[in-house]
Length: 287
Image (tube, rainbow, N blue to C red):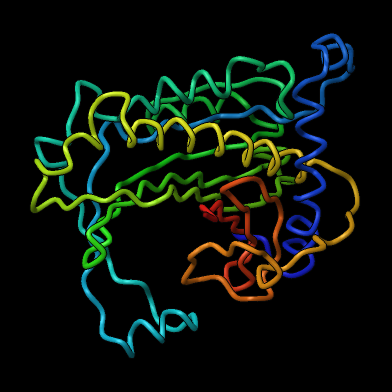
């Protein structure tokens, strides 16, 4: 279930300050972490994204329908997915995300705000691992990605997400759960599937799309660390001091509002907590 009310506000209000703490925590000597006894950090299980990046298309909407959706009214239309056009494919159907994910999360495993990490391939393997962790605290992250066709804009956009559940005392009468959604949106790339060959260079191995994937994986790992560390921190924290309307370079975001909180800002990227989607954090390009 999603966080609601005060619980959601406490988590999102402290995320910006927690980001700084996680950065310091991840850089601390391993002995400082392993010396803790007992280790109360949760176990992290990460379900890898699909083996192939697909192109997602959404039906065109009338102006009234777009307005209704921007106000949070009605359900978003179902997207259709299809394989990438031939000129956009490489020898790595997932664009190297599995490899990038292992590198981002595993390189300093002892210093993250989780006591151990397991990467699983699918929901069946995830369920089998969870059955071995009864009574423990577990963080579960289900990863996904797609390449969104932006239609009339003649652009595509790489989107990566982590559906995160933190379970305390898993599988016992004391079990409690916190749910959040983390989404990373890359800067749009100029390309049209109908004229795939014209933009083939954008999708070559090691090219702009692969760079988007590498950046997204690193950004999601940081978002995940913030989410887990904040959920484990006692008490609250001071609210984020900035609002979206105060940014000099505002990201394009149809679901954001001027008073939405800014959790973190860096050159070219900003993390937003949209008030209309409690428990969600968006990482958006800002330039």
